[in-house]
Amino acid sequence: AAMARAHLQVAADVRDAFVAAQDGLSVRFVTVHIADEQLALAGTTPRAGDARSDFETLLPAELVGDQAALVLFCNSDEMSSSGLEWILVAWVPDDARVRDKMLYSSSREDLKQQLGLGYFKGDFYANTHSDMTYDALVAQFSRDRTAAPLTEAEVLLRDEKLAERDGAIKSAGMANVAFALSPELQEHLASFRDGAVNFVEMAMDEQETVQSCGTKTINPGEELLPHVNPTEGRFLALRLPRPSGEQVNFFIFSVVDTLPIRQKMILSTAKGTVIAAAKDLGCTFQCTLEIRGNDEIDSAVNGELVPPTSSIGSAAADLKHVRPARPGRGRPRMAKRG
Image 1: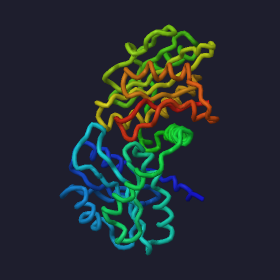
Image 2 (image 1 turned 90 degrees about the vertical axis):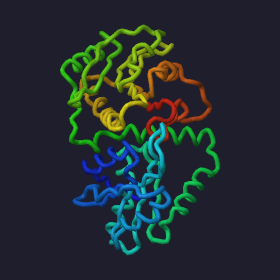
Image 3 (image 1 turned 180 degrees about the vertical axis):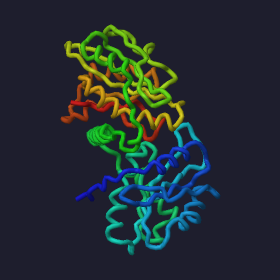
Image 4 (image 1 turned 120 degrees about the vertical axis):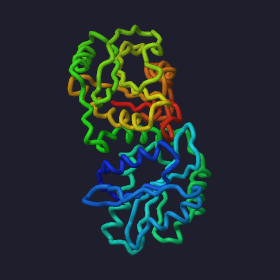
């Protein structure tokens, strides 16, 4: 059976250090220890050479005696349009305390989920220094890439689980940020609930309050692209009918690749809070969509309004979009809400 999750919170200093590490090629490692029942920052290590040499020379210095650690390792030696590649290295030595072994082994998902699953290529687990080699790391991920291809049904089931898992990530990692809805936005969402409008555009201001950018009534079949800001992150509430006449409420998160990393993280974290606040106002959403630009909204929405037929007997068959491997990569993501 799978090990139970520890459900520890990530300290603000870990989040801040990780966010800062996205903005350049200065940091190689962010080391995390468990202290006072939370995932706390132990330190950051600057780059000295390439990924291989830093892994084999700098990383051993981060691993002290029988102290377990979670190390966020940047495996990139240059910036790319899809961002930096991170691997979570779980160091759980054989002679660590039994309680530490359990906590560190079971806290990996807590750390990745609260920082953002999309940043991580995967995990590397080691409990002896002989295991902690770059060749072993490369071999592990090479095996992952060369594994037998998934069947269509397996791919859809995997995507369904990823969407469900992402949808469950709320604002735990940034609990100190309120993400309050402005009074005007609350009024506009009430109008959406009551059917007076079918489109509400929302944005985050500098005080991290969610503001209304306005409301509209959009006709069925009307092109949606002109109604979505092409350069800024936005939350959208949209109601449109299926061909059967059934009304579908969408919550759409539009996040463009050119947004700063920290802004992307804040918006992504706020999404769950905004959905929950809208629900408190009586607005429920049957579907949530994530798009990477206004040019994706029409295909994403229409794909849900008129879903394709499939012989696969699972709700996963209705998932049209694959979760991006990391921020800025991949097609729109849809998480269905029953």
